[in-house]
Image 1 (cartoon, rainbow, N blue to C red):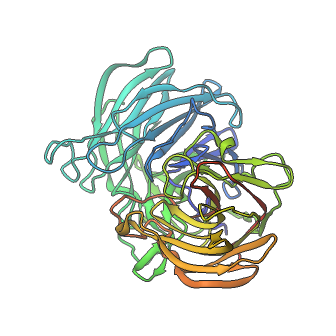
Image 2: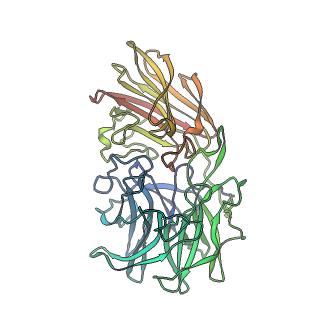
Image 3: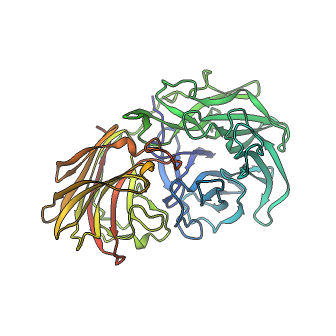
Length: 522
């Protein structure tokens, strides 16, 4: 039977919709560019990446956005013969304020050129758009920056309930604003999605935060404006009371009725493995799918309980996992790769027809312009390697292979100069508790000519290699996770592996990547 997660690696906050017999899931991309991943499937088992719609500056420019900001919790829907995408660009994370800007864009085809966006609001995040008999309703959680005791839900004052207002392309938001749901005593109520069935309006939300208390909560009302009553068990999906379950952090999803009359709910999840400081989710927040059923006007997991199963009840085969190898001979960057923040990818890389050419920009600690091209880690253990053609002129230029979570949490093997000699320098940023301080693991002689840098990750450990020979110490791979580091800065994205180049003189030195391989079948 097919296994959860159905989208492995960093694919959080799944918005789920159906058009005919085609199913779509849109997931958050945070600071990674282009924004929003959209996968399509016709069997709910095998999914293919078909679009990253936020691919130009007018739709998304995240230069200066802190780690774990950017695109949060998109909502994908289809109405009036076109797709609608609602998304948030969060500009601040720490402190009382969020500065979360909400937009809507639309397109007739999922993989076409999406429209210039409508700016909607900045009152909160996780917005969605509900289409109801020719009207459109905009719904989001409201953020409260004020002092304790001022929020709608005493479980967490910052998450100030769910608000609803009518919206149209011509008028924007209009009419009265309705506070429709404060949430349960679990609190941290966010990710609202509305749907209608049998005379009821149903509101799905996520609660409990993005960690191990996460949950899908359901409420209903006869009127869209409320009042909403909460599900008899509060939560339709959660693993918070099942600490031994192989999938944890279940929450944040959306309901879809299948073309064949079956019922499904997407959910966010993580697969913890043991690390030196406890369990950690090596592959970040992923997307799962569970069959649900209706009983007495309420949605329940099929087979009862609240813990979504690890397998889908479908007699279909998932495509086998395969090694990935790219020689960069095509005109486009392979689809699984992304870069950080900037809409101007041409300043970071070019495809020459024989290689991926990196134009080195700012440091790994930058929030603006990093020449870092990477793909998701999809299993707890994997190998990756890249062949480089590079001769940095000084110690201020470097290129190499990195396992990367954010600017506070990464390991890198870099080709650079030391005392005039070309060397491999191993560096890490070991977590939030050290801020941006680097830890150096020594330098290693680098032979002439093209070289291969590799990494082998095995759960909580990793080690780099040079031309197939291990170099340097065994490093802590659990750092490259949500749970890694002290956590002064919220972390809820996922692990990447890729190539990176910097030129700290600002002159745009260039280096070539001739080949990249990734294999997680180990």
